[in-house]
Image 1 (cartoon, one colour):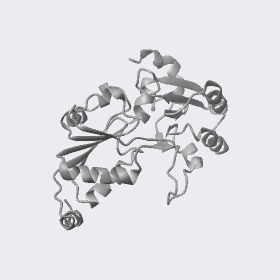
Image 2: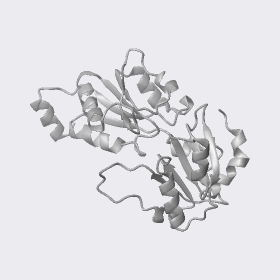
Image 3: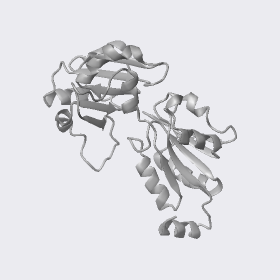
Image 4: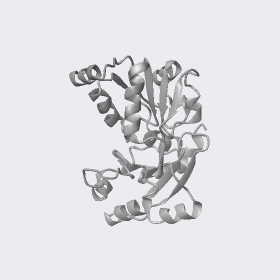
Length: 264
């Protein structure tokens, strides 16, 4: 416990009893959950989980644990971010093991860094347990290697959905277009028309291969393969929707060779 947190706890007449674990649930396939994360779920007193955590992983939770849905989906928030953080602080006062279960990895577009900082400022012990992020796992299950000696030696991970009221400028899509051979976009479906327009404006060819992978690593995984210049029209035609990972670059061409080998 840091000094500031100890003083606050003393002022409130409370003693922090427990510890919060920020656990990455991975992309959905329960076989990709880490052993450490699974062990914590099995002995947790409280589990506060996100919307994209799969039912198979939720089934690992200790039956006696208190389960709280803090899921955030576009336009539908079970709890606001501030409420979620405050809830973790409160639950740590009365419970030994509090698990904040987050889809993918807590520190990859998962607000884990923000939550960890707030917990530490409140004097709550906290530990992060990494998870496999969907930006790596979903393309892999689709037969798309993000790097390949013949096609790509660099990868850029970027969010396609930025927080409102951010203090810094929006994503520099011009820099992203020229930064690496493979681009992986999280939460990019809603803003896909704008993103595609910006990337083409930055100089990417309309024939650049692109893949959209929905519900990656789950039994109902879907893929839409196309070209940058026509993918928006294909999405509208097919009704392909979120949540999905977007992969852009020549590595997408490997899909037709490798996709038949996945185990779903």
